[in-house]
Structures are given as structure tokens and as C-alpha cells.
Image (tube, rainbow, N blue to C red; front, top):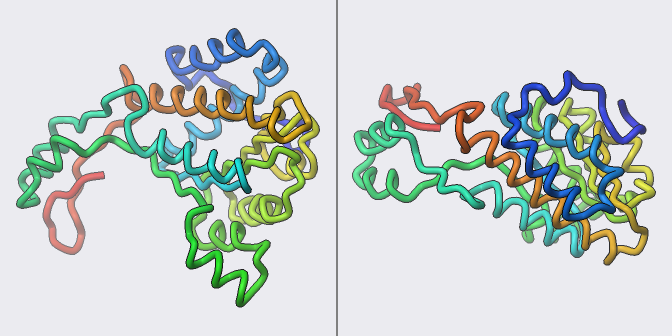
Length: 248
């Protein structure tokens, strides 16, 4: 439900207990986050459901939050604490398809598709010069986002204009929207399906809690999709153009 910090959902029954334990450990290590338990669970559910349905995650923020967006991308696009080895069927298809398939199969890892919207220097400068610079996140959401994808919008105040515009573009696109803010939540709270509003108002204090929050979410998502009994597995498929086996 928008504006309350937590969206209406079907509950956490679909999320593995082994994934949820990372959130439980988080609030034990950081008691100040006890008030965020419901929002943390809702965020995990929303992001896991999006990935399970084939969605991608877009992440945006400014300054230290931009660095957090890149950090999150690094944790989800490769192994965090798990190896994420390719399954045997996909590895066999890759070896049969590519001259260097054996090398690729040995070293490529399972990934959750994430785009940090803060890294496109050419687009940032071109958009600021030619259009409206405060819309550069929204423009990328408009270009990348599809119904069922997710946006993680990070703003310590909940009032960063470019993040607010991105959230509105994502909402129009039918994307799942998760906010990571300080305790007030700002306008961003009302624009997102889930708002994790950590205690604190000063940016540096808020950021000190943002990192353990997104670490826990990344650990939980990795366990959900690459741990024991993963929600889905990579499967070979036939490339339509060549009729050759591919992978995803």
C-alpha cells in the first residue's frame, strides 16, 4: 500500500526460511532496525518476486547513495558469498555452442540482472546539456524499465528530485518500487510500494544503516536463487535466429 511503507502482498510464505534468516540476523546485529522488520520483509518479497518472473532491478541515488547503487550491483551480478556455479546442463550447452565454451562455463557465475543508473557518464552529460539533468534517472527508467521490473530508489532524505522523478516513471511503467530512506521517508515514501525508512535524519547516520540493510537483502536474494533448492535455475534454450542452444 503506497504511503504506508509496505505494499499489500501475498506474504512471505514463498520466500525460503534460509533467505529470511539474513533479515533476522540483521535486526539482531542492528537493534535500531527493529522498526523496519515489516518493510524489510516486504522489500525482499517484492524483489524476489520480480527476479523470479524474469525482471531486472534498476538502482539509483546521489552521492554516497550512488556509490551504494554500484555496490549493490556488484553484489548481485556475481557471487557474494556463494560460488553460483553454472549448472551442468547449461555448462554443456555453452561448451557445445562456443569455441571457448569450456573456459566460459568454468568461470561465468549466476547473476541477478541489475543496472546502476549512476554510471552512464556520456548519457549524464548529454542529458544535462541537451535536456533536463534532473530527469536522467527517469530517462533510464523509461528506457530500460518494463512492467514487473523493480526500482530501488535510494535517498537519505526521501526528497532528492531526480530520484522522485525516477520513482514516478517506474510507477507509470508498472514496475515494483522500493525506497531506501531515512526515518522521515520524505515524498519518496508515498511514491513507492515499499519504503525502508531507517532511523536517523543526518545523511551520514542514515548511510551507516543503509549498507547493512542492502547487504542483508543481497545475501537473502543470493540464497533465494543460488542457495539450496533455488527458486529457479538457469536453463538452456534455443536461439531463435540460429536454432542453436543458448543459455540464460
